[in-house]
Image (cartoon, rainbow over all chains, first blue to last red; front, side):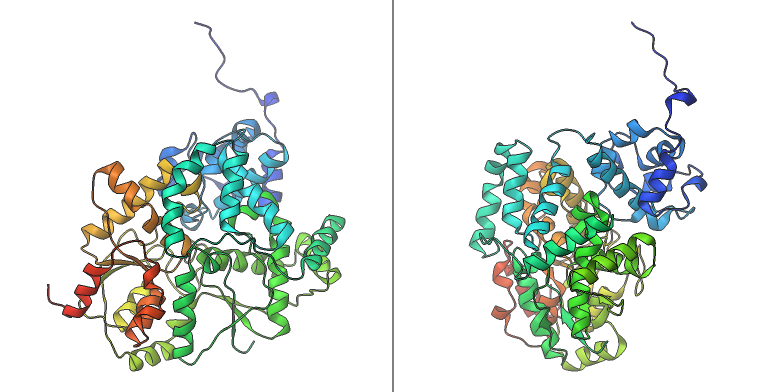
Length: 192
Length: 294
């Protein structure tokens, strides 16, 4: 058995990470985390997470950038805001999770082919282009881009039910003034 | 702003058609007819905030600009749209450098926004004292004998609760009592259904929704009443899979609150989108017609 060091030394940490996440999330209270665990015990998803929210907050606070960005936790957060509302230190935990998701996408360190970031990106792309989301087409893209065509086969009975009750549309939705949307997104890029 | 304009979002034009088919007639019936916001764009939901928060707030800003031009506040029946719009509106009002950039970009694109629009959920409007009294006065078919579990989900009451409690809200329960139904204590009423995770990681979606459905059954509810398209979809569509996986019958109608209000107000049952339910509603109809006999 190979013996490995299990703690990180200060020079291995990213000490500016907390400030970056504060900037990106709009949270100002993360330094005041007392590690009480209210977030983890409130989270409906924590049983599935590799690190519960309390640990993610500690990682952000202390510069464990790689660990936080590569975690499944950030993608499992469904943004139900239970932790954020209950946090006694008023940390915007859900917004911190969003900031971590954005940074992981920017730095391309999210788990590859993992369906959640794929869904987020596909849906955003569609909205940026057409101004509207077409439910069926987002789902199709999701399964193709995350390379899980079998998922589509499994979805067939559900699709049939929706079709029968007239709740599935094949139409690609779009706004009329797509030009305005393009101008808006371009103008925003120029501002940045 | 004077009056409201209706913001459907993607769901009410697709999987949640029956939400639109019931909420619009209900508002009309209580003298608050709603027009659809002309050329609205999608709110971006949780997805856009996970990719680019500046863009996310900007596309919401376009909707606000459209509403501001006609001097109306927005009514968003989808809890996801409601939260996303409210969050972006708050962000644009806070005056940060980032918010100023977005407002300038909106100017350049010809959709300036002056920050005057408010975002409301229909539940919030319907439980205002005066409107609730109006509804009570116009109930012609009280839903006596129907036990309902009021499910609020997460994004309506969190994190921006300006009309109800974030953990144990009661406004929908009050509304259901006003139309004669019998709301049961439902401790899971704001526990998350998993949202879009049910489509990405099925195992998670099945368990989260099993917990909710089982709790509703245990409380002897005849139906679960929802205010959010994603909650309605998850709770209803996954029932077969959940029943199979956990070997426990979780079959129960999952309805929109507006469908039941419409029914109580005497609107024709077949115009309220009940036929779009994939769950058998017959046991529930029997409960209502028996008027409390069980």
